[in-house]
Amino acid sequence: MAYADFRHRMSLRVRWAEVDRQGVVFNGHYLLYCDVCITEYWRALGMHYPDDFLALGCDLYVRKATLEYHSAAFYDDELEICGRTARLGNTSLRFVVEIYRRRQYEARLIDAELVYVCADPATLSPVPVPASLRARVREFETLAPDEAANGAG
Image (tube, rainbow, N blue to C red; front, side, top):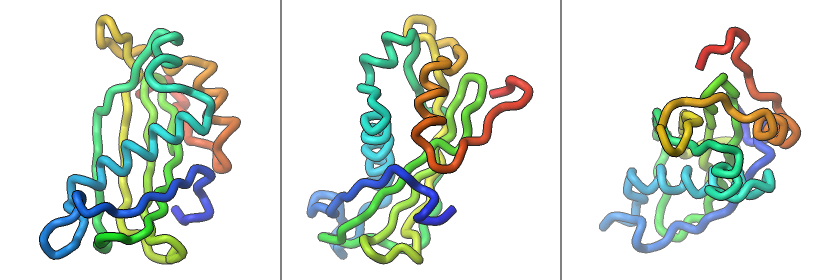
């Protein structure tokens, strides 16, 4: 992917509490950055988490989260965090997140992949991604998400 592939982008400045003694962002904070990006992504789509999801009879649960580190972020860096829905499965959504230093879009700091399962909040059993949610994602994204052709995942 490339910076231009993301419609959803948000800024974040690295805070003192997020770095180690050398001023480098502690690795676990990148997942927090991804979570904030995805929360803001839903807001950009007009979905308020968790209420709007619960009204659709579902909630989202992380099934998989992977990060690949390319370069470190440091205290007081201005970051640009970009996220998109890359795949709409039958019961899951795959997000990709890339983090850049602001105005340095040729080199990613991290790549992340997060897979969420759509589930009934009472039983925690997987349920299909609601049609209205699929429609919002399709309408929002610049690049169309891959979609499950056979109903799997």
